Length: 267
Image 1 (cartoon, rainbow, N blue to C red):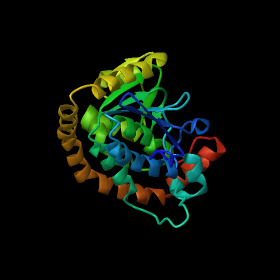
Image 2: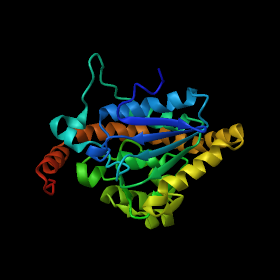
Image 3: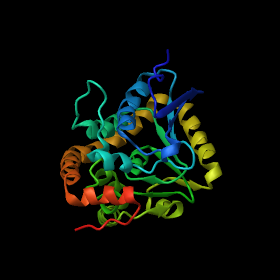
Image 4: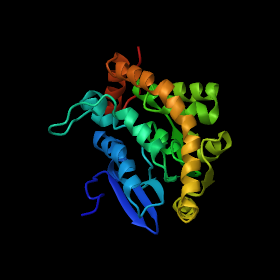
C-alpha cells in the first residue's frame, strides 16, 4: 500500500524523483474544503519521508489551480468546518498548514495553470518557484468577497513579495492580477502560455531533483527562515482575527450572497 493511497482530494504521482501533487476537485474548481486542508497539512510530511522524492510539482486539475476556500460549504456551516467522526476542532490547523509547507526541505515548484484565489494563492506563493499561465489570475479575496481577515497566510507572504502598502491594498480590495502583472510585481517567477505551464514547471522541478540535493535543500531552508520569522510574528494573531470575522454579519451576508448568486451588501 502506498503512503499516498489515503489521499482523496489530492492526487500524488511520483516519477524520476519528482512528486506531482494535484489539487483534485475539478468539478468544484478545486475549492479547498476541510478535507483538502487536512490533506495539504499532512502531504508535506509524507513527501519529506519519501526517499524516492527530491522535488515536488504542485498544480491543479482541470482549468483552475483553485478558487480557494469552499464558500458553498461555508454557507451551510460557518467556515465549512465539517469534522470527520472522532475528530475534534483544531484551531491550529491553519498554522500547521503553513509551517509544514515551509519546513519541507525538498524544493516545491508550483504550476498555476488557472485562477489561484484566497488560500490557494497563499499555498502557491509559499512554494519555492512559481510558474503561472499568462491568462490565469491570482489574488486573495478573503476580505472583499467573503468578509474575512486574510488570516491563513496572506498577511505573511504578500508583504514579503510585493511590499507592505501594495500588499495592504491588494488584500483589502481583493485585487486579482493576471500573469504578467504578477510577474512584474515579483509575485511569480515565470509566466508562459497556459499550455506550457506544466512543461516549464516540470523542467524546473526535474532540474532541481537532479541537482546537488543537500545544497539545494539547505539553501531553501535557510531562506525560509525569513518567512518563518514572519509566521511567528503574524500568523496566530491574523488567524485569531479571522476566526472572529467568521462570526460577524458581513461574513454571513457574503456566504448567503454567494449561495444566491448576487453581490453582497456589507453593513
